[in-house]
Length: 391
Ligand SMILES: Nc1ncnc2c1ncn2[C@@H]1O[C@H](COP(=O)(O)OP(=O)(O)OP(=O)(O)O)[C@@H](O)[C@H]1O
Image 1 (cartoon, helix red, strand yellow):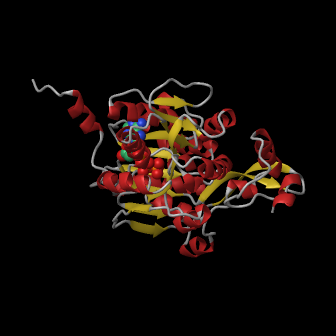
Image 2 (cartoon, rainbow, N blue to C red):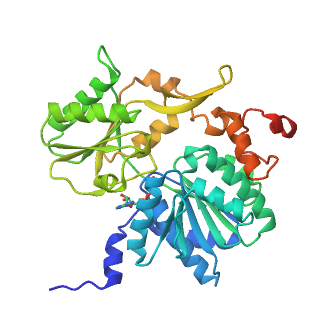
Image 3 (cartoon, rainbow, N blue to C red):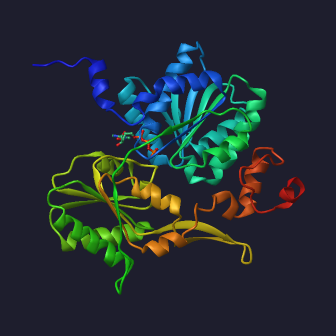
């Protein structure tokens, strides 16, 4: 019988990823600059590898501070901590509510990190803070980065790493106004992109038709299908239709309300063809392998503030070109966009950041809680009582 020692077992958990050859450059960047920016497509290995290298760097420098890696959702926080703990062969913490345990690496939600900053404004316990999924431009992430920029003035030993997929690196460099190495993890791909606009059928029906079509015509390639829809309700409706119409497909839901054990289904091998039906969470927050085909519905659900009614509500809106690109990059072989090329050209370049479209009183409340009067925002929120004075 072949025995595997623990280092061999760990090695087999860290497959060759696009980021694998970048370790030395990452380490060198950390020693030369307080801020490092990493841009690479979903699945290149940023969230699993960079925090481990950061721990290694910290230990090599004799620094006893913790490494934190923030996530935009609770699901990815827990699943990454478990996965990376297995890869490292040591305990990795996760902090999503009040929980925290006590290793040298911690995955946490960005809300949790904000609370940590409230208790310890200079984050004295930490040596490296990694902000992941910067591309999502969530309200909390933007405020966190603004606060970290302030801390950097007082803590020259602190290191900040910003990571994301298709991010505007130059804008971030200008924002920090100092030398920031950019690591762009390139990915060569010979992906086919097809446009298949809707005709008389609804988006949901067309999406299910496309799943069935791919399953029946792509017989040589039994790889998985990833279908992007807008809401959890659409995800469940589409799954029901797929189950009703075709055999040999295991349809798996992916949205932010799933319990952790159900989420892990995306990482498990399947007997039939796997079809993951996902909201935008499958773009960059939760990544998994084996997806040959992507079907992009072209819409997303987001909360938007109406200054007239002073109400914030969830609305389904068209995605941006950048989001279309991120969705496309999740496929290994072929992407079918359920809209026309003209409709693609009409899409905005980027999604409007949450800080700009959110109820400004939410920003104000967070700033009040943090005891801040305002700071250098990456993108400015709508004016509020303190905002007008600061802009
Ligand atoms: N919990 C998990 N269980 C099993 N495999 C995982 C898990 N999390 C990530 N992986 C795998 O690890 C590899 C690298 O994923 P990783 O999350 O590091 O990519 P990434 O570049 O950070 O993507 P993103 O931009 O979406 O954060 C992928 O092949 C992915 O399928």
